[in-house]
Length: 243
Ligand SMILES: [Fe+2]
Image (tube, rainbow, N blue to C red; front, side, top):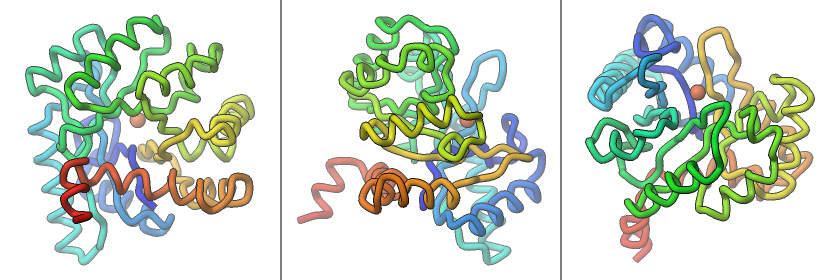
């Protein structure tokens, strides 16, 4: 499994407070069946603002430590970008990190209250720049929970949806679990991530088991692995590699 959303880098956001704690989280990830992790610290101005340089540096630091301890795990850089009015100008100024720093996908967290038209404009602005937006845990967003019809509307605008593994198995309550189950049944989920923080559990294996039973192997493989793999290689390189 590939974890697309994890707060696993030390001393950046509300993730681990030390390198040793980060390594312990990676050990837990391995035990849960995860083989690669996108490290996605918060980029949220005024709350946690991790710069691309800091994220890349901490990714190298953790990778080096894992190598020293003979722990096999791919750690790829990324960020969970909080959506603000300035998100496009921040992106244009090189202040936001895309997944694996490839410029093809950005993980975007919506504010609890938002106007759909404003978000649509931002999705289009990213699409114009060749960037696909992945909405982080839509099932946990207050506005989307009350207006679930906006989820397919955003997909129509080119967004991908990443749900949290714990949401699938009831870790955020029954209501969120039901919404997540429906999203999976309607084929509205592209990716699953743990959104791991210290003192939470990955829950990826447990979520995978449930999706295998309820939605079948094809869907499970796509949302826990294949769709994330396709983000590792940008489109043009994928086409080249296939030749
Ligand atoms: Fe997160």
